[in-house]
Amino acid sequence: MPMSPAQRNGRVGDAPPQTPPPNGQMPIVLLDSPLPDNATKSGIAPLARPVLTDPFGRDISYLRISVTDRCDFRCVYCMSEDMTFLPKRDLLTLEEIDRLATAFIARGTRKLRLTGGEPLVRRDVMSLFRSLSRHLTSGALEELTLTTNGSLLDRYAQELADYGVRRINVSLDTLDPDKFRQITRWGDLDKVLGGIEAARQAGMRVKINAVALKGVNEDEIESLMNWAHGLGMDLTLIEVMPLGEIEPGRIDQFLPLSVVRARLMDRYNLVEDPYRTGGPARYVRVQETGGLIGFITPMTHNFCESCNRVRLTCTGTLYMCLGQEDAADLRAPLRASADDALLHRAMEEAIARKPKGHDFVIDRRRAKPAVGRHMSVTGG
Ligand code: SAM
Ligand code: SF4
Image (cartoon, rainbow, N blue to C red; front, side, top):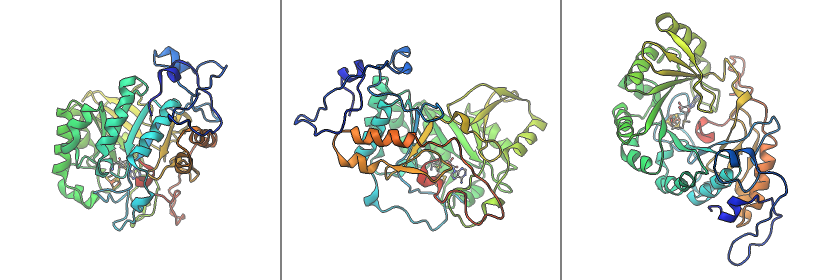
């Protein structure tokens, strides 16, 4: 529910849970403490409640929501071929996802990314983009974006652009159609390339994400980079992370990005670049192409110290860290009452437990992945 002008102009405290009055509007309780910094400096209306800050002083300004755990691909590093998905009755409705996102925005979330699974396979997901776009219009949200495999982008690109999506990430690990089919098991490269073109035509900035896979696409990183940079798209490379059980051993897929980077440096001039998206990627500019390459290296370098994000699943479970099992259920407090007081308390308790960092290890002696859930559940 959008904030009222009174809420935007004053500081609203955590009122104890109350029965909403008949008109559904909760009374506003003013606090004495000063407004959070980001409220006034940016010219954005003050937040109704204090910014969520974790025990290490990191403001939580970035929320990723996995709107579905389902997908039309079965990428070998992400899912097993034979996946069991969550029963539909367990899912939050799109209205509930909107309410949760809105509660986070009221507490300082400035960037919202919808992901999955494949976010565009969720039925009627465009209505969620449409309703969330009101937070862009009001200035409460800086960015609304998504990560997609691109298979349905040709259908939705224009609508996404119309709802204020300016930048999207498309995951693409190879430009070889056979290899693409081998990696995604079910994907069609031409559909994805068509989707990327549709997104560019709609005026969105596209970033390509590629997982570096030993013996699979390691010989193609350079051609992927030249293709992406040739079209004005940046490329981010990701190390395989040990999330969820999959059939072949992940240790066989793991390719340290330090190796990829060293190989690129033999042929290109890579210059450290200060560009940051607020995420874990560290960028270099390739002098020969003029484009950026990002490296996401959870395995070889820990990227946690500046982590400003939390992840919400499609069942309302909040993960404070991608690489830890601890989680908080936000669905119960969401459904327990029509006002958001219980929800805000649950969010505060959850953020107070955000750990300093993950402890991923890819180890031949370890039979189980470090984290049992697949990336498609938590939202990559
Ligand atoms: N389906 C969408 C897509 O593929 O872009 C969004 C969800 S997907 C889980 C998000 C990102 O996670 C993709 O870029 C994918 O390559 C990456 N990913 C999935 N499993 C991974 C793993 N085990 N290690 C590293 N990256 C992974
Ligand atoms: Fe689907 Fe994305 Fe996982 Fe591939 S990486 S199986 S496209 S969720």
